[in-house]
Image (tube, rainbow, N blue to C red; front, top):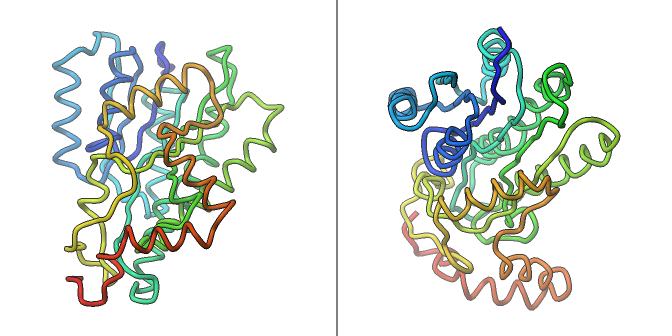
Length: 280
């Protein structure tokens, strides 16, 4: 059955930025499909939305799946077609990071980060393109919103796998946008720096266990609400890219102009994470 409202699919929707985006788009009247691996929290979030602010005609659904499992994409597509019949906005938000030196990070950890932060958005986007580009129920193009990172633009010590994944995400979707410029598809790439979300609190160590040492940061740490509002504004204006933190964007430019000096300054900033005697 075709939904009468615009439909947004949000991955990593139970916490952090994903939950902030879910609340905002629910208030805007979107029907929502929320995807997360945390079933109990996801059910609680859906109940909260049903009780606070959703109109009677809004549809809400949740899927508790492991996105790194190829079967998850099939379940998501099946739910979209059967429950909503359309898709207007795909938000590739789910992600994971690590805090460990490159040569001390097990390959399995790097593969896990690359899979969730890069391959999952690629796989899900490719499968959702027919729904996003369908003009059956709307005049405006469907939108893909990817939560990238400034780590995809410049090296961040102790985040080699994360930088690689976000760099790959940037290159893939910038290329996809160029190749589909003649088609009804809008791609918004978001490049935040450090946010007050669970992704760093849940960071992995080099062995795949929770990282215990304190993280180093560059620039200000912004709130979820701050970030959500800027993403929503960029979506409304149909921007191609969002650099919400100008100081970090300037740092990326600085790295390209004077990479050696940038690395020296970065090593000072991240000294505690580069210390071989730190707690792993």
